[in-house]
Length: 116
Image 1 (cartoon, rainbow, N blue to C red):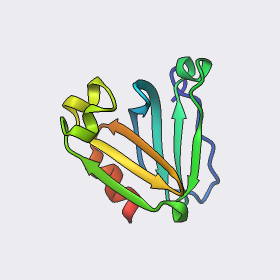
Image 2 (cartoon, one colour):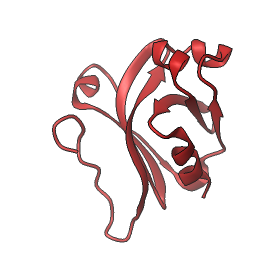
Image 3 (spheres, rainbow, N blue to C red):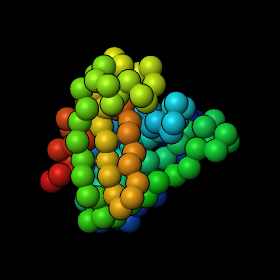
């Protein structure tokens, strides 16, 4: 992805099922990210600028994902996350004690890729 996002390294036999840019919510902050789902893991990589300001890379094996769900645009839960969640559906991913909320293009495809 080059200019905005660092390249995601993967093994030769690892297949990508979904890849899209999105916004990851951290409190009221929105971090520009590249979301990649492979047959083995979920990767959430901040863009170069957000990485400079503390955005961290998230890498999870697929078997550690507990819950994946969609929250409709403008719902009370989505409104707590920021402006873009008021207008776009939000995807929430839970693993262990962590919850990640984000907006992406084609959220239904992200959910399908994570549940397959």
